[in-house]
Structure formats: structure tokens, C-alpha cells
Image (tube, rainbow, N blue to C red; front, side, top):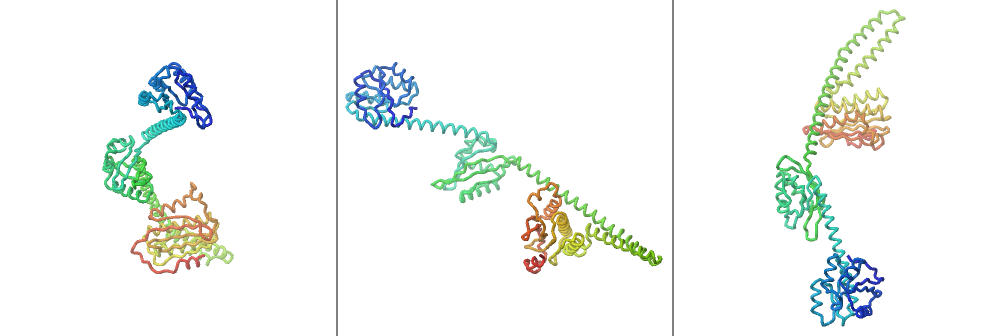
Length: 505
């Protein structure tokens, strides 16, 4: 590669010539914007090789028939040293044949002695051309290195790197596929480059149609291609991702990667199965727990309640026979028994409210709101649409959600007002519980021991519903959930929701 010489510095020219008078003539003939060149003469091949070893030169001028070596020797010397230094032949006008022969051998130009005005532009032009050739070689080297790095990277990726083309007629062709196609598809590179259809044929029929549809949509809209599908053999899954680009002719290109996600799919399926088993176990445990609650509530209501009633009767009979000074003590015992009976009744309702089975979810929620207000001193209002008939499991799950939400309000909200709203909404049962307390932060939802919220979420998921907790419009917290309602439920007309909310708050 010739050195880059600033335009205001003199050129370094090596003159192969043993005629001092001719060398002086060439130096005097130099005209141009540059300063006069530094001409260094080499009489023969030995001196030429020595000077080429010592320094780099912008150009070599070989004086035909005025040097101790032939142009062929000079050309061979430059090639042996792998130099692309321009070689210009200086020749007498009568030596045209020899000059043309030198051009054919590898010289870049010829300047005849009767036209030395061409010397300066010829030298400057050939130096520029040599610079262009050097830049081109450097670009080729960089391109080769870049391709080598890309191929090394592509061959080590856990998948198939591809360049897919779709022409204006809708035909597909792989312009490039990496070595990963053998591991992923069992096909060789030349097989895919020869026929893109072999790739589509390797896919499950249904998933292959989805891929073609995804390619069409990506080509039409310019959006990224993201597709997952199965292979015909081995029940394997691949994931294909690429970004399209369209050229001026309308041809669409996708450059991307396809990876084997079979293990991820197996893990995902196992995780879904595990979650399903956990959900089934949770439902079973919840059912067992509800049965136990019902048994305990029945024992409290029937056995303990009847005992307390008999004790009250006995206490009343005893009070009628006691002396006057002990009557007040007997009445005090009766009051304690009344409190015990009230407490037993409240505990039984919390464990398994009989009103839920006898009168439905709306009545049970209203009764729970009254108990909550009485026990906590927090105003609790309930508004429930009439005529909502649910199966026992759904009604019980929604009632437990209300219980858990009210418990959370009492423990954490610091609220003075709670509103419970049960309604029908677009084929769903919607339940909203809002308070005017301190609200809930995002990190509160992710606390390790937020078992109450997790329990609510599990119950909602078991009903195939949706659940969210947000900040209420008036401040505080809003818990809202929706669960699907049976299609045969009566969608009776009701008071507008805005008016109901205004009345509640």
C-alpha cells in the first residue's frame, strides 16, 4: 500500500535510470500544484531492490533504454516485494512497441519524452488509483473478517440463523442458512437454500399454515415476525423471530433466528400441570375446610346453643326462687348467658352462615356487613342486586372473599367507611369492595405473607374470573372482581349504577 502523502509535501519518486541528463530533464519538466518531487535514481536492479527495502515510494519511473535493467525486471522486483507502487514508463517516441509491451506486463502508464507535460497528471492519477486499490483491498479484508466473525457466531448459536426472501410473486427462498439447520431440522444447508418449501414441509401442517399467515402479515404491515410451532417429527417446538425489510423492488427480506424451545415447552406444560394439581389440591382443602366449618358451626348452633338456652331457662327459674338479695346476681348471670348466646350465634354465622344457604348470597353479604360494623365500629354499607341466584360453591366463594376483604380493611386500612357492591354486569357477577382508608401500595401486593390477597386471587381463579386491586377514586382501596354468570340468569332491570354509588358514599 503506497503511503498517503499530504498535497503540500513533495512526492517521493524512485527513478530507474542511469542517465543523469535525462533525470535532470525530468525534474525540470515537473509542473503542478505540488512542490517539485524528490527524485532518487537507481541505476540497476540491485540498487532498485536496496532502495525499495530502505523506504516507501509514491511512484516508480522507469526510463526505457536508459536503465541498467528492463521494465520486466522492475515489475518483478515490485511484485516480489508485494508492492502496489505505480510504475510509469518513460520512453522515447520511437520505442512505442516496447512501451506497449511494458504496459501489458504490468506498468500503469507510459509518458513519452516529447510529451513530458503529461508526466505530472499521470503520476498524480496513478497515485490516486493506487490509493483506491489499497482502500478496496482493505475493505475486502474487513469484509472477509466480518463474514468470518458472523459465520463463527452463527455456527455457535443454539439455533438456525437465516435470511429469507419473499419475491413479488409470493415465492420464498433462503439466501442464507447457518449450520444449525442440521441440528434443528435435520436438513443440510444446501437443501434449504435449494428449496424453502422443505422448511415448510418439516413443520406441522396447521402450524405451517400459521407461519405462512404470519409471514404475509409481517410483509404487509412491516411488523416483527414472532412465531412458535411444532415440527412433524419428534414433537419438537421451534421459535422463529425476525424483523422484515422491503427493498425498492417490493421484495421482502427477513433476517432472524429460529431456536429449539422444546424443553421450554415441556417445562411450561409441566408447570401448568403442577399449577392445575395445586389448584385442585387447594380446592379440595378448601372444600374439606368448609365441611369442617359447617360441622363446627352446626355443633355450636345446635348443641352449644341448646345448652345455653337451657342454662338461661334454669337461671330464670332459679332467679324466681332466690331471695331478693340474690336476684340481681341471677339477672347478671342471665345477661352473661345472653352475651354467650349472641357470641355463639355470630361465630356460627362466620363459620358457615345459614342465611347463605337459606336466603342467598345477597342476604348473607348484608348480614356480614352488619356484623362487621357492629364488631369494628366501621360504617359498612352493602348494595346487592336482587334476583342473583348462584350455585352453592360460587356463592360460598364470593362470601368468603367478602369476609377476607373486610378482615383486611379492619386490620390495615384505617378506614371509617366500607362499601360492598354486588351486581350483574354484561353476563358476569361483579363484586366491588371499596374503603376510604389509607390505600394500598404496589409493594404491599408482593409481600411474602400477603396470604389474604393470595387466597382471594386463588378463589377468583377457581371461578375463572378476573381480579384487581387499585386506588379508589375518592381515595382508599378498591377491590374489584368479575366471575362469569350462567347464561340462563335473569338480567332484570336495576337502578343506574352511578346513582347507587352516590347513595352508598
